[in-house]
Amino acid sequence: MKSAALLSLLCCLIALPAAAGVMRPKIAILTFDSSLDKKFEPLAKGMPDVLTACFSSENIPADIVDRSAIPALMAEQTINMDASHVVKIEGATHLLRGTLAPQDSAVIVTLMLYDLASTKLVASATVTGGVGEIPETACAGVRQLGDKLPALKAETAPATGDDDAQAEKSRLMIEGLGAYYNGAFEKAFPPFMKLIHEDPANASAVYWLAKSYDGADMMEQARLEYSRFMKEFPKDPRAGEVALRLAPAKEDKK
Image (spheres, rainbow, N blue to C red):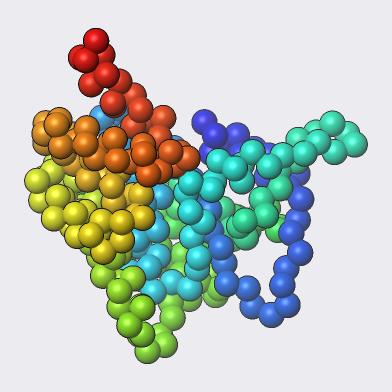
């Protein structure tokens, strides 16, 4: 997997110069590794969206690298004089990856945060929750990271209008993903639709609305949203998956 391959190369990472003073972390979140049943594969792929919303809802002072930029960041490789691979990620200060594992009827979520300058694991969290409680469980893990790493200590400054708007977007994303992962696909429609109305450039909202229609076997609506996703976000790393979902519709027209 790309996440595992990237992690294996971190030992020879080119260190980035740190800015003077306290730097606001910029975190690249990778798709999670999973030992869950194959039907939970969307859960592993969706963890970056879940965690992005969690960081915002928990008021954690960090910037999240747009997931559409991550493949380009991972592709920035050079070869040193010893011909060993070196990864250089200039768009992030930290890398967050994790795992999903079963425990009876629950899911164990493990978060691992690496500092890309030192290549060290600087904080980790392990939380457990029901399959239908993944977003809430993930947010609990993010709170643990914030407690363990001073740079991620939750901010307590008075909220501004922009903060309130972002918090509402995060709430809607968590609500929609919570409904989706609980199998209540129809209940996921309203929050994702509201997100798209308020932020048409939100690729994740379009993607998950399409997935929710798909899960509810509303294929005509799903294909419309998948098509919109491909048209508006062709460089998103989920585009390949979406193209496969649209393939049967193209075959039907032959």
